[in-house]
Length: 539
Image (cartoon, rainbow, N blue to C red; front, side, top):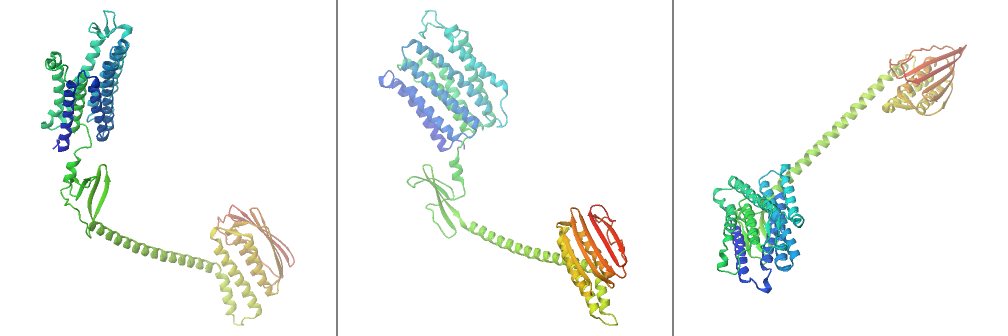
């Protein structure tokens, strides 16, 4: 199941390219125009592989490490080309390129080991810090090789010629770095084979082991120089074989699923139940699903959709019957929602109207209760046995003026405050009707502003109470209203034959204001000063 047709084709092409590299290396050996052919061919293969890594590998950590391995292989091929072809014969340059060659040689197994550790490792689980010691050790070993001319711990030159001419001797650093490199390779492949045994089906485990066996056979047979008995040179250089084994090993991990990649899509596409086909640039079908019947034909309930893709296009049929059914369901649901919203809106309107009516009724009932004494007086006057004369009608007008103005104050008191102007207007209108009773009246107001509604209403009620008590014998009446910061002062000057005043008013215990009363009386003249001050209780 893993080895699809496309996978087998890619493996065959890769192996064929590697075999072609060996064949051409032998055929073009010592040809002037093909001196660097092996390095260039190997570099091209590595570069192409790196491009596929960018497109296929989905794990960002593994993709970065694989691209790093590809870059190191390219660097290795470049150093080979420079040392053996470009700077061949230049002793100093050749020696430093030889030293530099150990940079990719040391880094390759290090990255390969980290890649092996990261396989099937959770994304949120970082590597322990002790793993960074390998980077430090590798860097120190490479630094020792690069500075060999200062200490000669890597290679010494008894002949006095600093050149790789076969007379140099290996120092302790050479054996240490060699053990470090091959030890990392062994450790990396051991980790890969261990995870391969754990996560890969039994019949596919050999795929990851095959590159390792090829590389091991090459290393063991290389000292025997068997190809030199038949050919003028080795079929593959060590660098090309190393690159083949590393790339082949990583590809084996990809194909067996150890390294997550975008693969096997052609099988998934073929097994899909949706009628679809992938066409090349000429319109020829390349892949088709099991439900596809070419050529596609549109109908009333199906629609053909086409999208361009890399290298061609994809076409598929969309069953519009289900979509149309969903559209109908959406329309029905929308209509139900609109009907429901309309019902809720109408219900809300009715409730709001009911609430407003209830509020108005409560307010009217409250107003009726407040002016009930005046209404009862009007009923008594109208129903009196002796009838209703002009004097009685004038008294009724005074009472109705109070009912009107007191009701207005109750309606305006919804915000909790009333203005001095409202009080002055109410008093003026009341005195206008008092004048009908034959009383000389006058009103004045000084100052503006707002006061608590209860305080303003209390002032008006006190004026009305005094007026009603003395109306029968009243001849003159002057009311002066003055506002001063938090105080409302009402000064009343009256002239009446008889007068009585109740110093207590219908105030609540915590009315929110203080009332003080001052009364001066001389014969029929009387001066009453009512002072209302915000804060406190009643007085």
